[in-house]
Every structure is written in C-alpha cells, then in structure tokens.
Amino acid sequence: MTPVTRWPAEAIWEAVAPLLPGFTVEVLPQVDSTSSELMRRLRAGQIEPTLLVAEQQTAGRGRMGRGWQSQIGDSLTFSLSLPLAPADWSGLSLAVGVSVVESLHPELQLKWPNDVWLQGRKLGGILIETAGAAGAQRHAVIGIGINIATPAVDAAQALSTVPASLRELMPGIDAPAALLRLAEPLVRTVQAFEQQGFAPFQSRFARHDLLLGRPLTLSTGVAGIGRGVDARGALQVMTDDGLQAITSAEVSVRPVLG
Ligand code: BTN
Image (cartoon, rainbow, N blue to C red):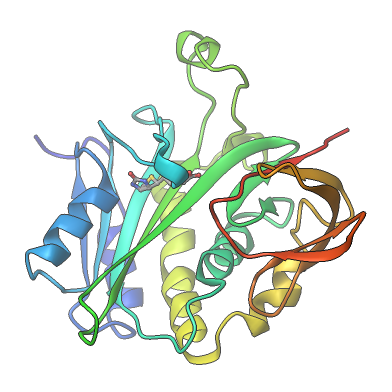
C-alpha cells in the first residue's frame, strides 16, 4: 500500500531537521494509531524523532480511554515523537493547543485542557503520552487529530453532534496543507516549553480560551465560572466555595454554551 495523497514530507523535513537532529517524516496509508505506533517504536528502542502521518487510522485513540474516529481524506491524523526533558511537564498539552490554533486560524478556540473547538463544536484533539524509564531520557508522543472536512452524510448521522471542520473557516484547505502549517511551529513550541515551561503560553492560551468567563460543570459535579488558566496550566474555576484550581486532565469539563 502506498499513500494516496501527496504529502509535503520533504518541506517539513527541511524546516524541522535543523531543530531536531535525526528527524524523520513518515506517511503510512493505514495504521491502527499513529500514537500507538510511535509508542511501540520507543519501547523497542527506536528513539529517532519522528513525525508519523496516517491517511487512515483503524484504532485511533482519544483522551481518557476514548476512541478517535476519522474518515480517510476528511481528517489529519499524525503524531510527533521527540526526546523531552522539561523541569515541569505541567501545561505541555495546553502549549501544544496554543501552537495548533495559532498555526491554523485565529478564530479557533481551546477548551481546557486541549480540545480545539470552532463555534461550539469540537474540531480537533490532542493526546500526549510519554515513554522512558525513570532516570533515562524521556520521550513525548504528541498525537493530533484535526477534522478537515465534514464527513459524508451517513458517517455524520451516526454521530450525535456533527463535529466542526477546518474547511468551514478555510474553504480550500486540505490535510497536507494543514500539516505543513502545523509541523514546524509545533516543534518550536515544544522546545520553547522544554526551556521555559507553560508561563509564556498563559496569555496566548487566554486569547483562545473557550471557558473564560463561561458557566461550566466538571465531571466531579463542581460547577462555577471559568476564570482562565494559571501559570502552570491549571484551570481556574470560581465556585460558590471560592476559586478552585483544576489540575487533573481526568476531569472533563462541560461548558454551558448559549
Ligand atoms: C482527544 O480529543 O481525545 C484526543 C484525540 C487525539 C487524536 C489523535 S489522531 C493522531 C493520534 N493518534 C491517535 O490514535 N490519537 C491521536
């Protein structure tokens, strides 16, 4: 099987290789999950920094054990693995979200911790995993899924809410063009995060913060108003009992939209 689409692998390699020695770009027509594949490779000792794109994922994974559905041709699914040793890992997924929205379109919003939303619907997601034994060099696998076009009617009808797609904002865009916009800034973001942590991204996150000033409910039952994120990326919620900082990515947040 060979890829059916033309991907800008060479242009991405030329932009990223000077930042990440040993970097490779690979496109697979099909894989279970780009993140699962890169995690398997890391566990097998293949540690070269790699950007892996799949035209189709057969077992895409989302956060909190959920799946990630994507239609061939209608979505961008890729993962980046690279060595990473920040002093503090808090806020990495938020910084990646900032990079994604800034690279794609200023109207995109971020729903803490790192969902990409457009006009009240989810457009993309980010899944970050790490590999590496204690004391050894650690590696991050950053998986990103972006809906490029709205799925065909049959597939869309199977979903309770039709997800948003990038073409609603950028009519001519396709997955290769979106990847070209995302790749180099993503690597620069992760390297800046490694050096400086989340603090420099705090105000940039605020510009896209879907939950800022909105009523919201956490999966723990806590309800309040979103008050932005702090310098380590914790979600601040003003509740009846005062300001609470939510750090656990296991908490799911429901904005009360309207
Ligand atoms: C989420 O919103 O729950 C995160 C979704 C992350 C999906 C991407 S698609 C590329 C990479 N491979 C996966 O299996 N998942 C991530």
